[in-house]
Length: 100
View 1 (cartoon, rainbow, N blue to C red):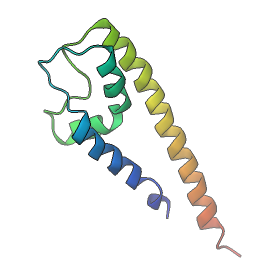
View 2: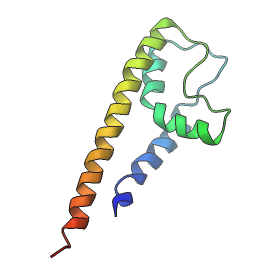
View 3: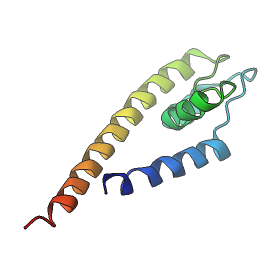
């Protein structure tokens, strides 16, 4: 039952990352792209694990990109952890509720 709460969010995030946030290794990216790439860090990292050609951080970018990417990536990772924790807590309460 625990896995009923988590996978759909990751699947939606990966689909959104594929559709909207493909990182080109030769294009120069600014701080706005750093916001988007940081937001989709985890889905792009999962994609990178399966396909080494997929980038999760741009190689050709500005200092503003680095700053924005780090800020949003840390926030995004914390958000995913909090969401996973609360989903797990809801699932364990749900599973535990049938015990009498």
